[in-house]
Amino acid sequence: MLATGAALAAGAAPAPPAEPPPKPPGSLDTSFGGDGTVVHAFVPGAAPATSTPFEAQAMALQPDGKIVVAGSGSLGRTAVMRFTATGAVDIAFGSRGQVHDEMGGPVGNALSVAVQADGRILVAGFVNWDGGVNANFALARYDTDGSPDVEFGSKGYVTTDFAADQDIAFAMALQPDGRIVVAGQALSWGKSQDFALARYLPDGTLDTGFGAGGKTVTNLHSGADSARAIALLPDGRILVAGTSWQKSSGYDFAVLRYRADGRLDTGFGTGGSVTIDFEGLEDIAHAIAVQPDGRIVVAGHTLTISNISGEREDFALVRLDADGSLDSTFGRGGRLTTDFEGRLDLAHALVLQPDGQIVVAGQSVRKRAPTKIDFALARYSVDGRLDHRFGDGGKVMTDIEGLAGLDAISALVLQPDGRLLAVGRTVSTEGTHHFALARYLP
Image (cartoon, rainbow, N blue to C red; front, side):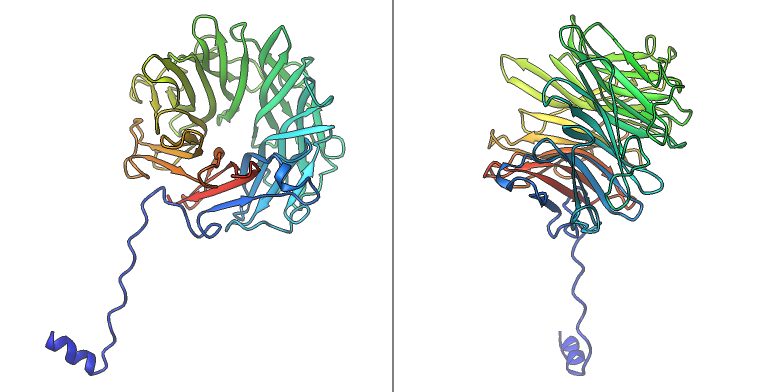
């Protein structure tokens, strides 16, 4: 102590303060929005915020780090927004950062978004021609400043009718050659609900080399079928995941593989399709990704009802080998479920990390506040075990708006630096719906 005191008296500099310990994986990234979250409450020129039902459904990253978010705005119009890499609204895009659009029809809704190599932005979803049951696939393309790209379709918009009552495009993927593949459902009231795919040329016209005139419809089990997610394979084949109803088991995960020309690939599963039953009443897949080794990861939720726990929904994951068979090295025989706090856990998105870990995101209800829903993420190791280094035992829950909030993640992306960016919606204590984003440390 005497030597230290003498050194200080002689003018020696004090030791620098210790570096704060690094935050654990899954912590909110406070360099984003100030506290790790961003909530956007209004669209210029729309109805007052208290009556505006904003629902962010999809997200894509630009090469410069800017974030494009698409979903629904007020008065039945699509809302597209762009944020900077730090979470600020990019006022150079559209009208002060936002585009409010009908997607070429009376009522529009965006469910998927992608950024082309040239920076132009594609949005897919549906339009309602009568504001009710009659809907068609819809695509819109915007220039980098948010204005409609008049070189695409008719003045920037394309709609596609499958001769059904309600055609909804839930997912979209861009091929390396610029063609656009869109997947969803074609519903004819009282008749059938089928998987529906369409492929478009870069200018928005249907690709007649795909399916029948650019479209293909698949009726899997004569029940209600719907495609919710899409992934492209390096050889041009197309994977689609969603749900299919069977009399024996109810709604099950469904995964289909198509050839590049739109025909079912009979070398996958049984005749081109695989259905997976989690022994729940409702098993619905919302996300799909392909590992570098060709194995396929699918995420969604499963609903079970028991006399002891009542009704419960959990995250559900499955991994398939490249041929569609269940991967026995993952979870329990290829399947796994995850319960957060006991009641309502729905997975809507997933990403694969370069180290092989799997991150799944959605929503979960708080056990101590059963009317409250929060952002929810879980991270799994390569074999399907929860990664206990991530959050609390492998799970993270984030409250966006306070005790009365209803928060849900719709989309998740992995940034090049490994950070996880989630987008969805929050409902405030006043009952207003807003776009909500959160960024997490890797």
